[in-house]
Amino acid sequence: MLVDIANLHVAFPTPSGPAMAVRGVSLRLGQEKLGIVGESGSGKSLTARAVLKLLPGQASVTADRLSFDGIDVLTASESTMRKIRGRRAGLVLQDPKYSLNPIMTAGDQVAEAWRAHKGGSRKQARAAAVDLLAQVLIRNPADVANQYPHELSGGMGQRVMIAIMLAPDPELLIADEPTSALDATVQAEILRLIDDLVARRGMGLLLISHDLPLVGHFCDRVAVMYAGRIVEEVGAGELARARHPYTQGLLRCMPSLAHPQATLPTLVRDPSWAA
Image (cartoon, rainbow, N blue to C red; front, side):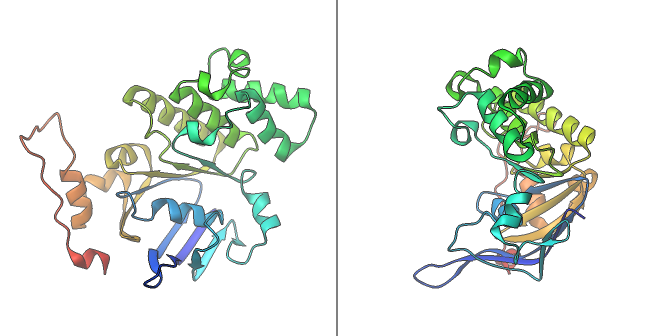
């Protein structure tokens, strides 16, 4: 089991007392594709970052169990976590223009990640970087390796981000809204790329998104979060038959070409969902 979470709570201090951002989340992930969906602020990214111990210092994190491949993340030292982050678990963020170093070429950034975890000479790292750029289906990878982030399109930048995360051969890939800044065509290409890489390398995938149809089509299981809690977990093929009214409401709010509506319904919230 790569990720094992039981009763995770994450809180932040405020003048009026602790604000609970994640409340009692439990989930497990092996070599499979798990999607976490929900609206902004529901706690999706905080849950994923807790696995890598990447939350701000002021965050209060408690859990009955929070482990990565049997390693207790709550008590793990920073040196232990540095051996997990990047090397065994990669994190792909949602917008490459905020995540890539603007003063380093794409090739240098991939090579830096490769050398940090595998060592080797600069020449070996450069060759590995070009190969990784080719693996993420970048045309003319040797030329792209010499380009800076501002010279890349959004889709190309996201591919470079994925190449950086793949450099150490991780066992788990956490993709936090990896396609939200991309148009629909490029979004589909990136998702197909991630799907192929996960299958070919035998990795586990934790995909965070607000797009239910996308996650339902792409993942094996889907966990739906609302107000810091997982309110429902279903197989991806069963998403259309979800039983929780929040999940049903999100699905009804999606426009459909097959069943057009003059006005989309509004999600009516029940206070009991957050209880």
